[in-house]
Image (cartoon, rainbow, N blue to C red; front, side, top):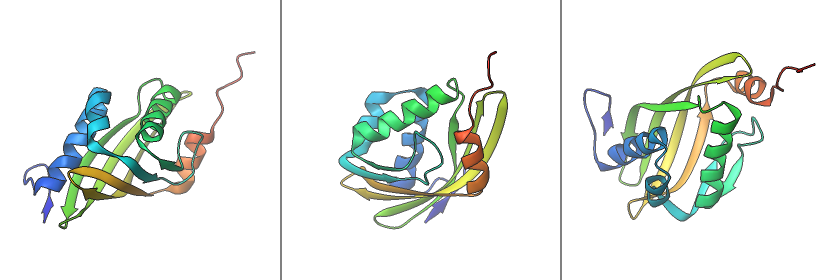
Length: 143
């Protein structure tokens, strides 16, 4: 089953949309409840805040570091989802500003859901080279 903004899908797609809505609202308590204690989160290593993460604290820390690095501008939204009985593939659109530079991207995220919680997440970005360039950039020299 799949969905778009106009055609909402089943419960797993709605769970992922609600997770991203809570992230956008900065609702740490809700984010905590959406994730399994031992969640496995895997994003390409494109900066100090991303990589292979284990556990809710590690994932919440990654979200905080990404927001800190971008002055709170790092924004993500779900464009569409497709689901099976235990997995959701979500097309994610994102943008951020850092050191006077703006970046926009898309990625495919695949979530495993167990007992109503995200057990694992794996991300596949559209343009890994641009992501690395953006997240690894240093602030301009203030001298």
